[in-house]
Length: 137
Image (cartoon, rainbow, N blue to C red; front, side):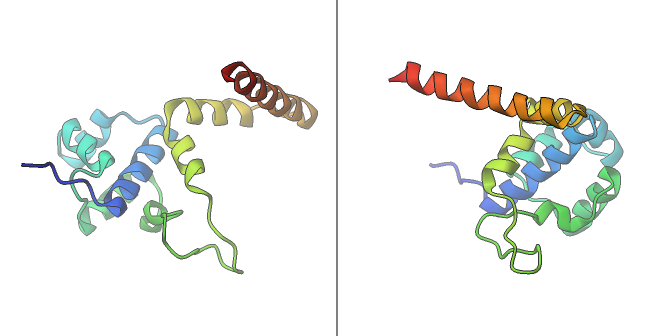
């Protein structure tokens, strides 16, 4: 018997729950406690293994201080909701912001006030990527 793959929408919503939870530095245990469920259930929601019902999603949105629509933003294959014909963020942005390293990097980068220094940081990272691509060949 094969294991059923999570629905892409459930995975996306779960990844947005994880991203927001990490943005506010809340543990899975704490979110589970506030929801009256175990952290394992929170893990299953975040992976998309278990679907999040409408009332539960509303409860999560209130706890994480975001509108319910936040969990559907930037959904792959979805229509752009940005208005004025703008498209949402590419999938890699959501994936980056859902990772612990991406979130830590974004938080640290936003604390750099000097625009010239921020530009130099971007240049440094781009140079590192170019060097690693050259080394890989």
